[in-house]
Figure 1 (spheres, helix red, strand yellow):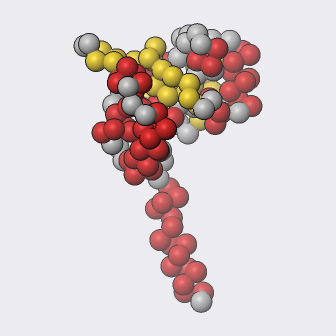
Figure 2 (tube, rainbow, N blue to C red; figure 1 turned 60 degrees about the horizontal axis):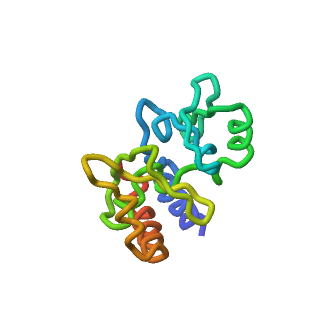
Length: 148
């Protein structure tokens, strides 16, 4: 029995050591935007002097109040799917960068989208059955979240 427990622990170590792949530029979450500000329907750039580090990613905030709000409940404000484009994760199973000004709050969670060169994945997302797409996204994210 001790051997079985030892093998279980030994085989579990790689899974425990994996870190979530966040979409970050220069170590900044959401390209330096204040994730709490999205919930006020007013995305704002954060300030370097108002920063918190979570899972080796830096979150910047536009106000001390937003920093405190995030600090007290980071899971509520962290973007879904590691900050990658929700549409690409859900419908393509791929990690794609985002436009930090293209977002949607769904079930009190932040989802970000790609928008460039005439392609707006938020518009495409809104053409789909949202609950079905969310389920696909959650399933795909469980598969790809640790892959770089």
